[in-house]
Length: 233
Length: 208
Image (cartoon, rainbow over all chains, first blue to last red; front, side, top):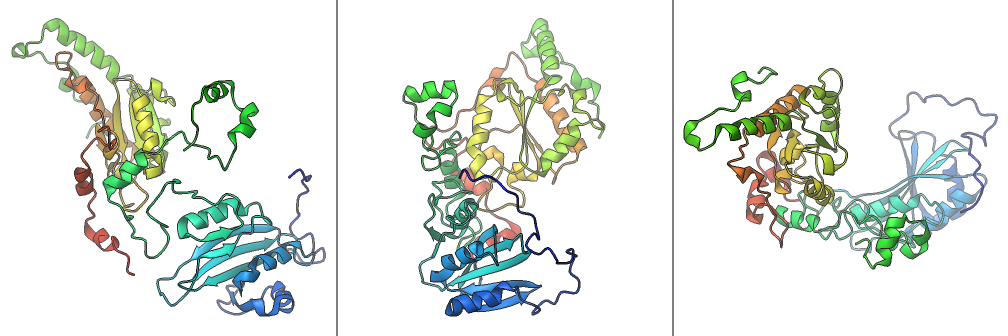
């Protein structure tokens, strides 16, 4: 955590490349794939299931069990240097034949590359993929949001709990197709449960151990805590 | 609709049969006049209505003309809670807490369609009208309402303030929520009020 910060300059690994310009006349389907794709294929072989290029962006479907290795390699390899995880999300289609997808958007600032990794989870299989939190710290909230909205479990995430809905939300996962738009409970029950929440619950014990942070707390809060007042939910 | 109140409504009327003395009505007039013209708003802005609210407070429309010079960002010094924008369920206990922290006398303006009824957000995350959480005095329709609309609502609230009487203190009684459910109105009334209508009937069930 205490590594000194050195900024990454975009395009720094391509000193001879021409200045980037807004691309014109991109085809909807097809086109030149991201150069990382060929290296991924040669390195991981069977684990790269298929790929497509849509609007000039490369999507790679990978095997679920190898996902973590692939992301780790894309991050660490000096010829790739995907140093920015811009999004982790999920996609569920209304057509039940199409499996649920988990999507990672990776960006390589030094090489000016963008790649989209997808893992397909067939219906009936457990919704579990490995977390990339140990590679990108920024995956923390992205994976929590994905878990909150889709119920996808990210194995290895240190603190996987709801982030948008409150922690005791019991109605399910709102962005799943079998979730009714208005929720599962009646309006009065939803209100009753929402009002029962403690509006001052800002920390959970997983997020911040109060004992660890005790010295940093304001004097008034320390006094209240010493007197035995409970914090959080 | 003029932006100034009609003069006959700004004065306390004296009705000899009302059992109110001349002194009390004059005192009422003084108290109500000062209260109505020094309402300090507690802005609870969560969405685009808050932008219109800011426009109302800015120079062109100038809320200061109504004695709302100072936004009270502490509920303990506020008179009127202006809820501008949609309130998600996660914020429901927060706005309830703010309302309970405000001292009497206090009023509430529900600004815009979302605060008043949930608006177009008839979904799992949004409260279907803040009157299910806190008592509301004035509803301002619009999506979002123009500053003129909000000012009209504020003037309606001023009229309401000016009509209070010392002799009739029922308006001072603070509603207490039901201790078990913490709701102000019965659960079946909430369910009935937030029944979907129109197109949203078809959105209550998933297609799967």
